[in-house]
Length: 139
Image (tube, rainbow, N blue to C red; front, side):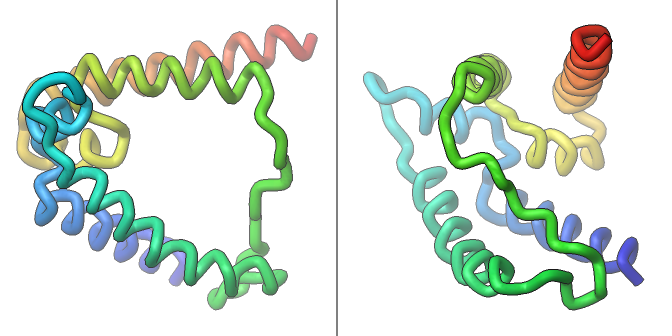
């Protein structure tokens, strides 16, 4: 049941990305073009997502387990450190270069666009490199 609800949530998320136009890299790049022809629609989509998710996070903070019985895994770190800032910068640079972030890229994989496949491959390689560096650092 958990895998089914995860699939359903992912499909709803992907459908929302497609309907809002957030899988179109030119729309994302238009949002990032503050000095040119700025497109605020992505900000409105983000605001809508924040409003909806904040309601659910409000209730989730008060629970020990999810509705399906899985343990709640809420973030515990509350301070901004160097790793968070550097990771955010790298994420933002990739977003600005490609006009994609992980959610829209995965939704675009279903369209067969080579750009989405290349982005997803680069994302997976980046995650594997991070994992390798982290395990090496721990030793």
